[in-house]
Image 1 (cartoon, rainbow, N blue to C red):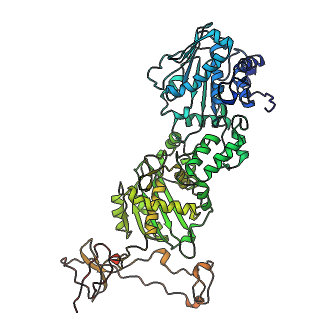
Image 2 (tube, one colour):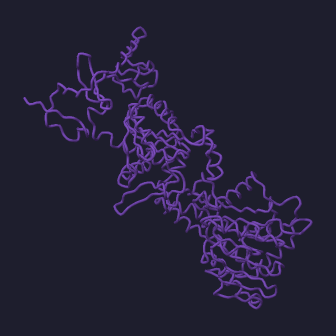
Image 3 (cartoon, rainbow, N blue to C red):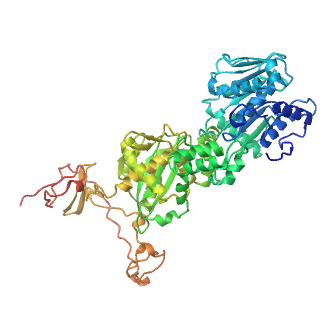
Length: 637
């Protein structure tokens, strides 16, 4: 075991001092105990360096005047199999038998009584293996209760029900696996004020990392991180968090050593290597490995995509390069006080073999700070950086999004937009009047599975270019999948702990992109056309009359003087912007400006049935070329 040299915690106050006598007393008591399980069973409890540092800090640092312990709440977040439970059991016995507190009440808490008994059973066995404690203590297996007779103190494991815990006079609380708590009620009852009548109560909290960033455990975790980083001060709180940074290489053994202080003692390096190799080929195993062995808070219980493959598309790109490209949109509005998402997906084209995505997100401005505090998500930072747009007020006004989509349609060749009909019907109708092709998409397993699998395939091949957009990345990390017996999958909003609106929008847009060559019709871009004495006219079924066929050109369709002309056989996508090919016009040959179309005059006469077009159709048109609702007129020869 490595040699240990103690130095007091950097969190010791100037008004506190280190009492070597009190620290030695705690260390000496624990060293008289014995391990109870596995190859360590029966051996003396010799503290590991990180354990002795903690014990000396929490029992040896006291106030200079009162001689009371400085630290009351000890938060120990460490990977699994590092010796947390054994240390907690030893501390419980010290508070029970050696802390000079008459009538001490020590409670073991967890999500349920079975989990609370994990530490209790270790403490019971330690007591039975020590001849002195065995004589001075009694225990009741049914009640899960140890009594120290000289001071009439007891240690008991309690249930996870908070209702019957009011009014306890707690000297010590051993709270095991805080991450498993469904809410904060039990934690607040046992740790907030329950030991007010005691001279120096202690709450010893042990846990690993989790995935729910709205939980009480993450709240306490964030408090510990803030104290360690100097952003927050609480002199009575002792933070010990052994976790790998999120951006660290989770496959690097050096990273493992930094956050597993007992590696090589209670956990073998060879076992870590095997677990890591399994995690590399299985997304669910990756989440488990990083959470249990690196103490990283990951947003999904079973991560959908391997984020190392997702990171292959993180290279930034200029959205202007996609000017005029064919693309498809996905719109997920959620509710007016939530995040709205619109994602454009550009399928492979112009010599590129990857998919580009351009996400846009909106959030009500007045809810940003409240959500930051409630959800512990960096909404305010994303707003400042321009990745998330805050709209005025406490709800999102959809006309703001409509205007943004019209601006995007002027820059990109948006062929169609898929939308979830929940809350988006009126906007879809408004956008249809602006010449958007809006396609309602069901959120069923059958509808979302094919595009979801295509997104997964694209990510695994490293062909999804997202420019490392932080909001979209966060949402992909949040995804939990639903699946059925037939192998269908879909991202689940109900099972995902955080927002995934951008992922749903991406999947819907992918559905349009992969089906872009199916069910095409000559009437995709316009209605029924006819030539009359007034010129080319189009029948508008919405108003039930003919009108001049006028098609407004988008910005991306206008002549671009800086774009190379393909007159010498060089493909356009290989030419740099501003380069002139052999066929480019000379300055004197600049393109003539487009002539404005005559203004449309509404027809004010009677509505008549549209005449049949003077075009003959045969009956051999394949069904897949027909658009549902197309009118096929047959002219007999």
